[in-house]
Length: 408
Image (cartoon, rainbow, N blue to C red; front, side, top):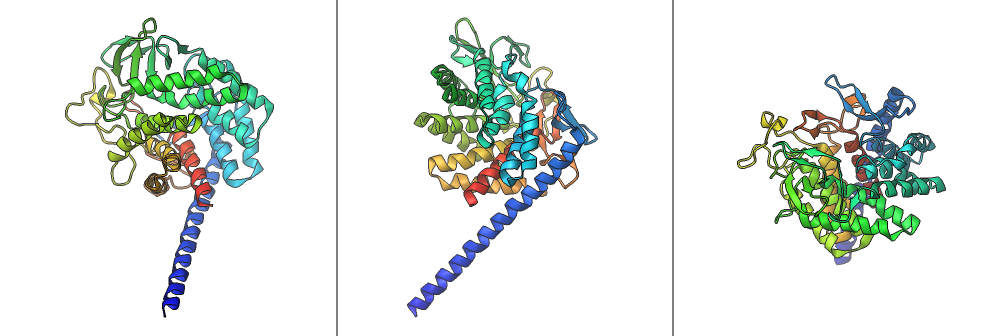
């Protein structure tokens, strides 16, 4: 009798595992089909890459908005094409990814702002990983050297923008934003490819400076820290895209969690893993039931007051930002693995499935052919409010790649 019960239990358990596996497989395949359909339509709409037509968002009528290569976002669309190649194995996606990636080669000497990691590593980094060529290595190395020109020994940080004027009028010529953590992977990869330790040292120095100065005691993050480039002293800590100077911008917190998780992966420094866990725990603690955050965790709350001509002064709706959720989702897959905490991985899967639900995933043939709806670019700048964003799709597909690998 005991043997019979044991065998019955094993049969039921194996059946449940099989059902779960089939369910996961169906979820992944259905989202791949949806993504390829939408992106195929987008490719038809944008035509051949011409340096000015990289998808970014939609206008008020829901029509596609594109941008030039010198914006901070052109690398995301080629990166998404690489992820579709990785998800499908179809050479059609590889061909398109190569075409859109190589169109960005002139950016390898670009030094006007800090976003070369987004621009060149989301594109060429994935190209090198999935279809390696020697010229890709050379371009990544040159791009990293271009980014390194913005590093300052006094501040021990990479300057984000050349100039920033805060909402209360304070000016800075050495602002550093939390987003900059995402550009360090370019430096770390180029250091490995070139053997130049200085590139790695710059990435580590910037991460350490960020960890020291960008976080409050609870590991919530400031968006912008403004330095004196001659002394390294901090002038002020403010926001550009968050609700108020003392609030926590949701996407910024996601950038931080992703960035320090990446730094741990590349350096194995336990201080970075500890930071990533604390930053992510703050993020998770402030999520609503569907795990997609409001664009700023403190919007409309007492003691959080927008300043000056920020549009947040008059617009205080608690809009969701699916782009922040997609970034955090990808980071959670890695953090779950590195920390050996299955809860992070389970949460990543829940976020991915919520983003793929009708609440956030667009109906086929709509949304300017982007995948996700309900993102927020910058409410303070009255820009990209409740629209699709190309980087939300990029990190959604990156998360889908990680989920497929973990489920296989």
